[in-house]
Amino acid sequence: MIPDSAEKSFSNYKIVGKHRESETIMSLELMPVCGSEVTPFTPGQFVILRLPDPSGSGSLLRHYSISSSSRLTQSLRISVKREMPPPHLPNVPEGAGSSYLHKAEVGTILSLHGPRGEFILDRTSPRPVLLLSGGVGLTPLVSMLHELAHGTERRVFFVHACENGKVHALRDEVLTLASRRPGITTHFCYRVPTDADEDVRAYDSKGLITRDTLQALLPLDDYDVYMCGPTGFMQANYSVLRGLGIPKHRIHYEFFGPATVLVTDDDRAAPAKTIVQEAPPLPKPESVERGQSAGVTVSFNGAAAPTTWPHDARSLLELAESMGLEPPFSCRAGVCSTCTSRLISGEVEYFEEPLTPPAPGELLLCCSRPRTSVEIAFP
Ligand SMILES: Cc1cc2nc3c(=O)[nH]c(=O)nc-3n(C[C@H](O)[C@H](O)[C@H](O)COP(=O)(O)OP(=O)(O)OC[C@H]3O[C@@H](n4cnc5c(N)ncnc54)[C@H](O)[C@@H]3O)c2cc1C
Image 1 (tube, rainbow, N blue to C red):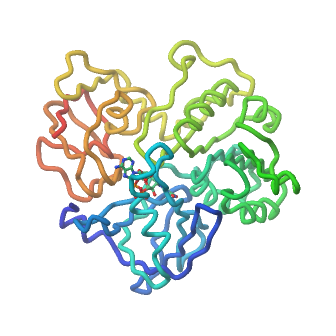
Image 2 (spheres, helix red, strand yellow):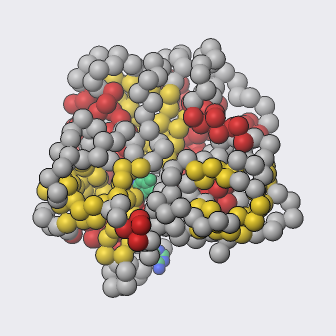
Image 3 (tube, rainbow, N blue to C red):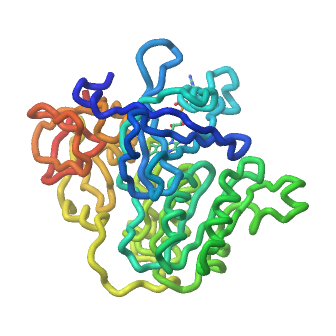
């Protein structure tokens, strides 16, 4: 259920084009019905769609990263993977939102909120960029690549891992963008290439992305990393990147589902051995500013031992999930108020302004961080 005040922040967009990008991924081009321009966005951001619930009761909220260029003002594009039942549960229904979008016809009107999100390309940084994706996680990174292919000379490495050529989306678009100017390198890693992939040697490496692959590809430098993909991919590659000496605060990442805070054992103990050069100190990016809360503690549901707020945690919701707790949530963007919880003591601050301000003594977990030590109770 979306609160009335939040309801007003949704606008109608029409599907004006559909394009199959791979066996599993479909792009939809969306245009505001009112004839105005698309709300400006920063590459990496997502929109929230309100879609019909197949059970007939109410609606579903689903996030989709914008995969198009932020320079386009008339329309935006999302690229949606059709989620099939897990192999061990063949009788459960396929993903409700993604299957609706795959079947929706051109002309269908969708209710859209946004753009929103903190996983954004730092346009002011002079550093080289590593865009690292797995599967459908490439969508926000393709939007970033559009930006980086124009008006900058930053070195860019676009590294994408997927099963094989049949499910490799947006391949031609990425190659075309990479050919726009010198200094953009692509690397495609197929886990199990098909015979057709082998015939034309459609990939650059086979199997999983390894430390050796990245070390051979990336010249010694000081990178901004943007990473998005399945949880296992993110955890494995976060460790590889940290092992290559890339500082934590340079690794930006987004999960397409319930999130966790990425850490390595080394992060908890000693600093990683530096292979890729550490940069001289630079102004603190936003992710380090989060560390201002270091030393504050968080107690969920009257836990006897409060948890120290981790330096890199993004939201109280993500902290709770990383501890194995399961507070209710839906939009993860301050829109639906599903994660409203009781703030028993302490203060929080919002990095995304909630659409409906919580009542006194309440907070939204998905878009807040502690300002002081806090005690929180889930509904
Ligand atoms: C910030 C963000 C950005 C995102 N960007 C993208 C994007 O660019 N592209 C994209 O494709 N996705 C993206 N997502 C993911 C997207 O929001 C949806 O989560 C995704 O499309 C799946 O939603 P669904 O409704 O299709 O699946 P759901 O209905 O939520 O189902 C998920 C899975 O559960 C299975 N399932 C259904 N019922 C059961 C059951 N009873 N028991 C067990 N399993 C069951 C389904 O078969 C399916 O595999 C993003 C998510 C976030 C948070």
